[in-house]
Amino acid sequence: MKILQFLTSKAFFKQLLYIAIFLGVILFAVLMWLKFYTNHGQKLALPDYIGEQMNDALKDAEDKTFQILVHDSIHIVGKPGGQILDQNPKPGSEVKEGRKIYVRTTKYNSDQYPLSKLPQLYGNDFDQKKRELKFQEINAVIKDYKYDPAEPNHILEVYYKGEKIVSGTVFKKSVMVEKGGTLEMILSSRGGGKTDLPDLKCYSYPEAVFYLEQLKLKVGNVNKIGTVTNLDSAYIVSQNPAFDPIKTIERGTPVDISVQQSKPSQCN
Image (cartoon, rainbow, N blue to C red):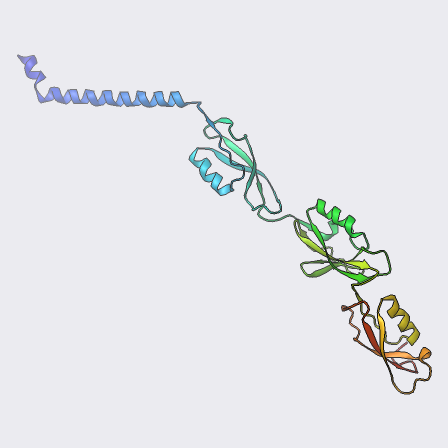
């Protein structure tokens, strides 16, 4: 009777509940251990991150417990910065959780070359220098032609972003040229194009005519100041267009001149 009373008592059910809770905890712990033991060392297929932006790849890798580390970056003309170019281990490789993935990405900022590190440009053949610059991923285009009695298609002036950086008297070695940038060049020509505007003042008339002919320019109107008895011994006192050291003029353009018989006092 006492056993029956105990089996139907609250104390018995209370003890039974404690035992059930204890067994439940033990069972849960065993199941978790089995799950860990079964998955421990399990390998996962590595995703293909090549071509993806770094930020997107980092988010995906974090969800899969991988780590992405940049070990190198290069600038590629036409590609946006932060794009993954290569990865190690390769896509599809079987790796463990927490594996580090090393990637190579594109740079956000382009590489730059100081002008002093580029091929010598002034006075050299355009086609040859264009090929050399292409190896450094720099473009070369023809901006214009200028008369020059030397060999044609040789580089006389170089412009970068609208600024003259190379000529017979200019070399801005500190200028930085971006990879993928464009250099505009003025080339020599024996006909057509433009030439520098000469300063004819103080030249004798025959000297001025010879100078203009060398530049493929023409003598325009001749204005005589005072009495000019012998044009061959007259001197230039002014011209139109007026001399400008940075101005060029189309070859074949006439230049009007004013002459006087005596040499101007301001001329040496």
